[in-house]
Length: 145
Image (cartoon, rainbow, N blue to C red):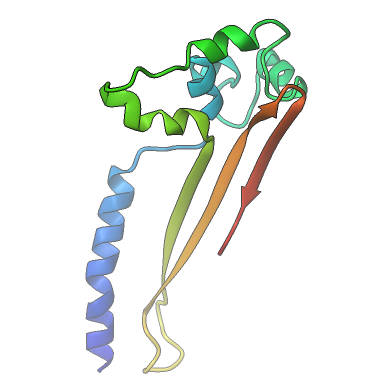
């Protein structure tokens, strides 16, 4: 019985290791980069979450461009009907990110023979941010479990 419990966790661990090995790092949500058609490095230096001077100014301005620059950016965001990008346009307008992580812990010497050697846990969170109107912005992180 102890051996079958151990063997059930092996395929899961192998799949997890392969998934983690193939995954590329994603440390931020790109809604502002999509919205204003700039790269993430326009506001971030090095890596997320470190902001450069322009990024600090953008944050302090309520995640909006300086006066007069917001309207031209909004007009560039239209997607022509019938184009392949039409179905993806919602993601330019709804700035949400879902991130999840799965952890597997292996116990070297189980305290009891009937306890499994491997235990799995899931961690996820949803992050979002944007501006609702002029002078009204938001940014949140929610951890459901």
